[in-house]
Every structure is written in C-alpha cells, then in structure tokens.
Length: 268
Image 1 (cartoon, rainbow, N blue to C red):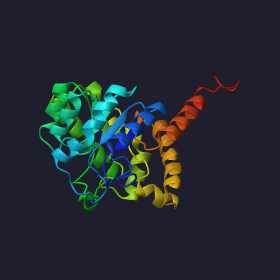
Image 2 (spheres, rainbow, N blue to C red):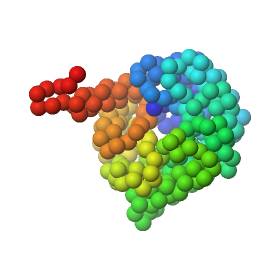
Image 3 (tube, one colour):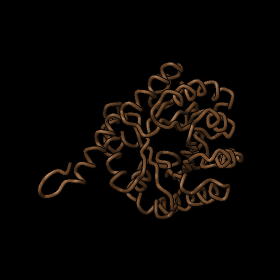
C-alpha cells in the first residue's frame, strides 16, 4: 500500500503533496512502482497532530481521489476516521477505508462502509493522535492489542462489513512505545490468530525505527523500513503500508525468489 499524504503536517512528507497535482502524480508513480493500493489521507495522524474538520479534509483529498480512481491502475483507499469523508470518497470510486480509530471516532463509519460494500482496515489505537502517546500502558501489549483489535473487527462484522473484506492493523506507533512496537512486530502471527482476519502493518519511517537502529534521516529510515517490510511478510502479514514503494517491492520480489529456490537453483 503506497502512501499519499495530502497534508501540511504529516511526520515524514507533510507539505510535499498538499498540491493536488503533486499528490496525483505521486499516487500514479507509486502505482507504477508496484503498489497494490494507493492510500490517500487528508489529516495527519502523527503524535500530537491537531484534528482537521471534515470540510477541510474533503477539500484536500477529493480532487486527488477522483483523479486517481480514474487514472491509476490499482484501487484507491481513503485514510480517514470520518464517515462523511469516507462516504464521499467511496461515492467516487474508492474501494477501501483505512480507519486509524478502528470505528471508534465516528459512529456512522461502519454503516457507511457496509452500505458501500467496501473493504475496511480496522486499526488499533487508544485515544487520539493528540493524546495517544499518553495511553501506552498495557498489562501484556500483544494480548491487549490483539483482544482490543478483535473486538473492533467483531463490531465491523456486526455492522454488516463482509469478513472477507476486512484487514486488521496493530497500529505500530499509535499509543505504543518503541519496545511495545517491537513486541508487536515479533508477535504478528499470534495477533493474526487472535483477530481472525489478515493483517496490514504500517511501520514506514516511524520514529521507533530511528531509535532502535540509531539513525534519524530519511534514507536511514527507509533502510530500516525495508527490514520491517521483509519481516512482516515473513511473519504472515498480508499488506504493508509504505512511503518507498519501489524499494519495498524489490525487497518483496527478492523474498519471493528466495522462497521458490531449491537446492538445484532458483525456480522460474
């Protein structure tokens, strides 16, 4: 899943694609580089981010979503917690809603997704982006996140969303410390078993990678992200959400080649 942040304040690329034409070109480039989906968002969810109202979010994302739906070779996902924004994007052809609140922020979200027969990503987060880092207190982070995420998945199914159209995201970096993020990445198979649906994982360029790898520049974060991309797929994740699609795609293709290799050599 390639990331298109149509925001002035996202942690990695805020402002780079605030102009609709730049965002559209970036989304098309991500598709050409091998993204399976393009995820468009108009509100930053970085720690401490201020909320954006629905009108502003729609102003930012709608020209981008409409053009990408018409021109891109892959489906478009809308990254939002607001039912009104999700509905507008789905009405013009978006196929998935990526909701960092897991349905908790807007009581109408699950109904809107179900009525549109769209795919849905339920993510784990406590609090809001402004407050979430104060909520990183768990008895057992793997068990607690898995159980809370399973409850969100169950609510989505109860609301009428097809279980086959659901993904769960453990919310790396959302109300988690660096150590808790690592624990969740190590336990992806256990989390998948707890929630009962495929996993999407988003760790791209996040600050915990800089901390544990001892780097703090974009190139270094992209290198660290590649390691997590390979790890996530090795641990059974269905999808990863990344900024650098081309690098991740190459890493995944090499992983698949290695997986097909035999003692006699590489399979075709």
